[in-house]
Length: 280
Image 1 (cartoon, rainbow, N blue to C red):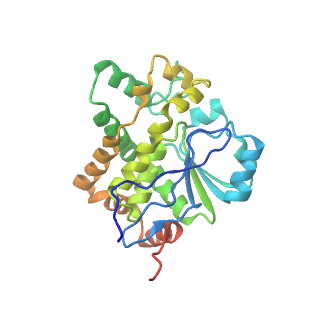
Image 2: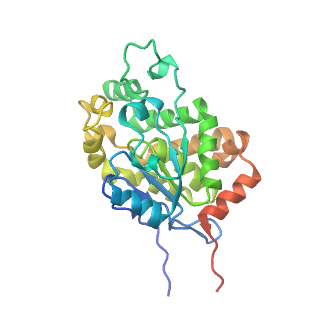
Image 3: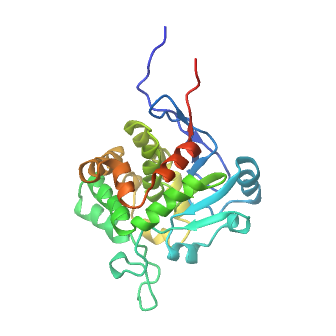
């Protein structure tokens, strides 16, 4: 007698020296009985600390062909490109903030605060005014889609059309990376609660993520006075973001199609990510 479980699929952590929040999105179910294929879509925190052995594992064993880097130009300039940049991989540098826009805090040549990160004001306001943390974050994520739909779509198309495995990352691997991965998983039919569960998984590593970032500028300045609770990203945040897309755009797929996602892209992403169910 078979039993069904309502528990989400356990995450496939990749314990790799140099990162603390890397995992494989494989194993999660999709509509129609398929599953996300292991070893084709990975997500991670920042990659600048990867030692040579970790680089070789990603390139030679996992088979990474493409890296989707969601950091801003400021982050790449101050923190560095990371050792994977020396490999023969395709890099997609796709910030989710409007570069140079004064309201984001991203500096240009005239800016008097060259090390200020674009999200600092948002999260400081959330803490100081004690806004509902999840609602605030959901609106923040929606800003990625409204401010940089071009880069959101470019990231998704890079995943769909990469010849090998794809590694998506930002600084912590939870907010920007979580938004892109949630759209990709939703598009291929991963159930909503499984999408939310993947997003929520990063909270298991929040303390380690903060310890990593606190050792590196410009993140260290951003984290002064921040607690683990301040940096936690509630699961309801992703539910609210996806519900907002349901209400305004016909869901994640509707939003994507309104911004240049084609049926060819959809077929490519499904072929890339989904293992079809096996016949009985």
